[in-house]
Length: 413
Image (cartoon, rainbow, N blue to C red; front, top):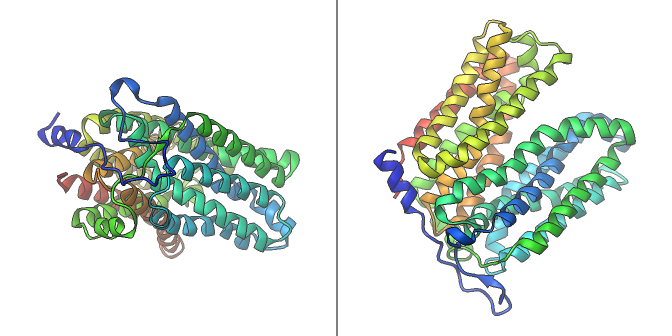
């Protein structure tokens, strides 16, 4: 372990909570000790985020049916995903600011109710505007959850186990990402797209009930409201870290958004074998997340360097594979491991950088990721249309690796 890694592991402290309202009598003080960490509550967050991310990406697998039923084009129907991402970016910044003193258990449960309501409204949407309105509710829930995720998790486990706890939360993301599109497609063929969203509401309700029983009262973390957010934004360290985060996430999505043309034009995979490539990626991403938790707890600086650089190298190998099936599969596996470890590593590392501003950091990082998703997809599309799909892979790989190097160059205070 390097001296920098040792220092950064020790730097995180229990956040200084804002004084709760008198009504928040159930709110509890900072993080627990080693022997009373609430891992069951952490698993409840994982189930909750599984439901959120599943609902976020379900329209991608059901576009044709949604568009036909509501009388819009597939391109217009696809904007339901974009609307959710945009609202989530804004929600991540504003939810903690607008509700600075509300007990975070109550706030998370309220966001869960919004998500369940969104899924049900989508399932029974009579027209496209109603569906979009329902997706706005999901965006609020999604952004609000990610703004609170680091802070709430830090209250449930001791500081030395924060990386492992975030890894558990991210398992829900990994499973939803891998399962949502194929599951949605299969169920949509069997019983129609509306029933898929009813199922998503059921999963969300299960997560909501689980959290109701196991989450303790949690005070807001750090100074409340807009002042804390502005103070965090003024930090040069945080600004550089957010730019680096956007480079890593944007580089990934500049390539991953176009993995189908990359698989066919570069790797020679036909549509029938694309599922195999996505399965390799999904399993590898799950493994990357499992590796990230222990590594970022012990060597945080190494984690924020290794996973983005591995992601970047994988994209370069994919682009230059020359049609070799073995190289494409190997590159896809490394790609999955690289990006699979990114969210857990970055979220934990940012928490160590600003341990008294966890909610502000969480909101800013959530916004940076959502903006990077949209920006990366646009830049990748321009490269695919104007140059080649290899160009999107190369640019994405360089951006991701550069982001990792930039993150590792920063010194945690």
